[in-house]
Length: 490
Image (cartoon, rainbow, N blue to C red):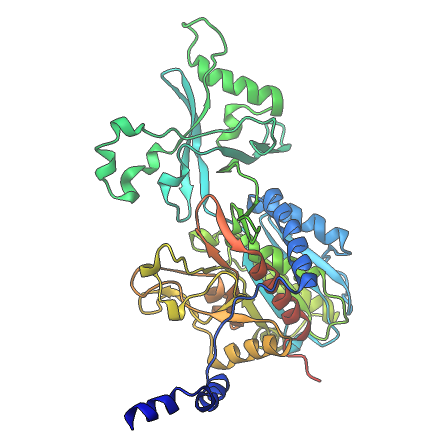
């Protein structure tokens, strides 16, 4: 009798109601790759070819702003003039000291009803030159560095590096430097201690294996002359090369902005080319998708769409070009004034802020099956499952996060559902293992409704991060829909 009941319970017909109930009541995030949909596959691959160009062209915040401005101008945007009146359909941009950017497409609604905004950061972890960087030691020429942002210092040794910089010369003119990106260029490197002598180092914590003071970049080894009585002849040889090619003298290095980044091009990863590998995808993958989403708006807007790129996120969003700077809301206020055609009242400016909605477009930590104990598999974001909507980030007990409201979280995800754009959600790894932050908290401080959302990334903050192409494309689609449709009244 018991065996007969078991057989009945195992009858597929008896399980059907439960399967239907499961479909009705549960929710899961699916892998989005569909090789049978060739049209979508082609669109994904083509979009990511353009994205790789952006990664290669914009390895620093200054370079990404220049790349973005060039793309904007080719797409009909013009430099914003605060004294001009803006009308529906106008496309404008404003650079923030060459290291931040605001771009907008003007809608027909009053700015008092708020803007649809997406904000990303365009700085990435790197090595900056110290103020007095160039020295020689034992017939080598080196540049001393100070690391910027959260890096694993040991990843930066014995790997090809490129030098990108902005230098003001003695006559007041400026020069941009990029050495190590072209095939014919030399590259630079930080030497590593050979394994045969590294027994003591190998006993140290990973954070101490390479110290910050050991991140000295090898830049030369040929003296300017064979006369050994000439002082600092190896250093002088490097200075002579810099002067001959760029007009740079050592005094100019003291005030320059020179960054050391991996000399690696963005490449496809995998036999099937499913991933993009490259430096600086945190957060330029979200910056590029937001930029393209703004440029590709192809219908008259009701609400003005605004794309914002911030600097200094990796070190706390401080400084005049960071998200805490008052320059960004000042530009927003000027845009409001130009749309209205008059000075807005204090209450109109307040209404614009309070009625604006924003996506803080920053990357998420993708679940890595090689390190499963670092993640909560039920609450992780996965490469290949679409854009990640993240309610909160922070440390430990949600410290230093904006923690988006349930209402706004639901509003954003229902907009994506309406447009058949898959999404997922999760946290930044297991609790108490670390944490992180985004610019969302600073926009929330201003009174803007905001939530984090972006592309899941593998190997975040490394010299060669990885992202899934399908996630990149779906993020672009999500941002475009947000610009065009968020809070648009029928």
